[in-house]
Image (tube, rainbow, N blue to C red):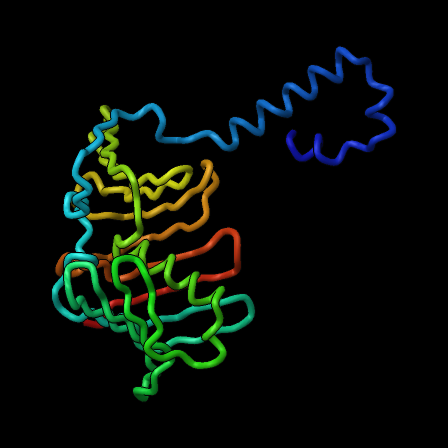
Length: 228
């Protein structure tokens, strides 16, 4: 129904009775509002005064050992991959490197308190827009993004927990599996419009065995499979 409204021709629309036109416009606006509504707004909320991310049961940012994933990254028509190595240096500092199977570096970053610094990067990827995009992605995966509020949402029927990191009009949701207590999905949205979604599957020793990250406003996908 929504699509049919969008493709109405201007001329027939002008001949519609003003009352009918007003009804059509109202219905159109309601449809738009419903399509952008927050699916979590009716859940029970608990806001924490301390911004302690360790309340979120997501092992990836808390691991002290080096983590190695086989990476496959698609950016528009470009595809590259290799071994993604994530090593926690300090509490809010990580070293993130992507190498080929033969050990040649593609990039080497340092993520420090949410800021991604380039140690090395091949020319094809050493662009401000690409660096900022990777910064957003690794902040999402390693819980390093800046936020103003930490909110625990709970479904009273299923007892499922959803952790929301909120900053202005941007919210990031870490959705917990009700049985295993692990984080199965991450969603980053702005004004209730989904920007990035992450699926986490096949946990092994508390680490997600597979991570599938996708942007919805640009053509970028990142698939990671745990090797170590």
